[in-house]
Amino acid sequence: MILPIVAYGHPVLRKVAEDITPEYPGLTELIANMWQTMYASNGVGIAAPQINKAIRLFVVDSKQIIESLEEDEKNDYPGDEGVKEVFINAHIVETGGKEWPYNEGCLSIPKVREDVDRPQTVTLSYMDENFQPQEKTFTGVTARVILHEYDHIDGVLFIDHLKPLKRRMLKSKLDDITKGKIRVDYKMSFPK
Image 1 (tube, rainbow, N blue to C red):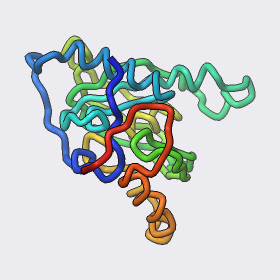
Image 2: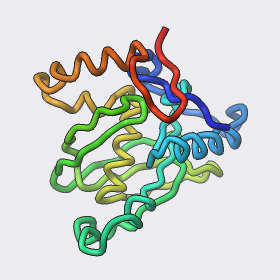
Image 3: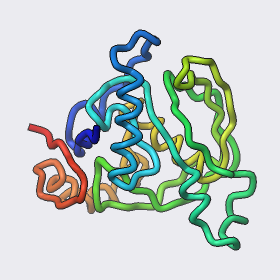
Image 4: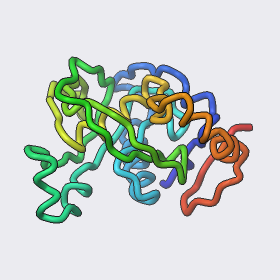
């Protein structure tokens, strides 16, 4: 089932999400719905807070980014083959490498894209969809997508990484999103 994406301004987007147990009600269905919602809205990742659940769960499919690159662009992301993975109760072990800019957007903040600096690599400890413990290091655009989604489960949005002047310049756009004055081709839920 395709779920509505929570829009900027909703309080759930600013909550630090809670860890969950394998007994979390309807977890398998929730994960399936998150994949379906993400693909229906042309996303490459989605975190539970974006569908109004303050839990430490996100899904990422960066393979679609890597597969759509031109051959010469693939050299920009050496060692990054992309992933399609579920991340439960993720916690950052470490980040590394040089920070680099990339133009990011967010399903909860439609039609706003800005350059954000993030580290080249991230090592996460997390549970997979079968609640098997994992610890992996990700690099390149995959690390970036993971860090973006990880921010969501910590109550952080990509615009929080922008300089204050840039954020002030976006204020009217952000206010319009909060008020529902935005047209998108996916279902959204706006703050009351």
